[in-house]
Figure 1 (cartoon, helix red, strand yellow):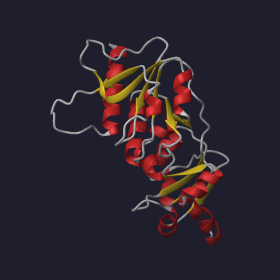
Figure 2 (cartoon, one colour):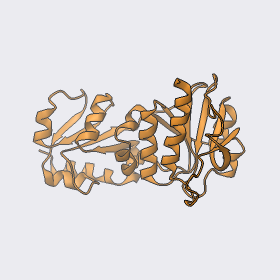
Figure 3 (cartoon, one colour):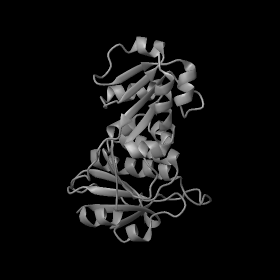
Figure 4 (cartoon, one colour):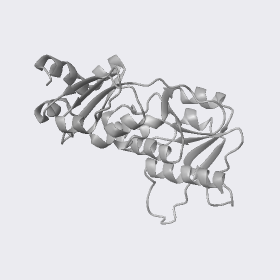
Length: 251
């Protein structure tokens, strides 16, 4: 069982500052931790109940495995209802994607739920690279991690200067904007060129920043058929645009 000293040592990772200083992040719950194991991610520490450990007799080597009770899990957990297992993982390294394929870029998105849903959606459509502005919510925020439903473990997310990246990527840059062209206005409105393409999703309320707007080569919008709503949720808009890009690629 876990000692009081070890529990105190690990409980500091409820604070994002501690995670950032040591370049680690926390994953919790049976479903999410099973996704970690399936993706073969490196794991620094596993704290789990006797029941969970009895169901997972083969765990990654060089991982510290500690049996805990419900009270200890509650001390470690950021969830309202702690769930059998808690893991501490090193943050993976990520690199700017090479020219080609489809890249998703996120410009100053702030809501953790939206960010997590976008990563989950990108995973669904096979988009393996997400480039974020430095002002975008961290993909290692606990709420983001949970909302990705495992997509984070299969997607490279990197934070950098978006204008610099977009100016040098050598690909078509689609920008989701209210003043863009109707994506359903042509038979194939969103082709994926041979050199690849980038899709930019902006902030929930302000959209794409002026600096990034200047890098967009094609502005696109999803038609407002109802005519009453002010805008779409950022993660919903991202899903529709990714679906359109991928549909045109495979048909």
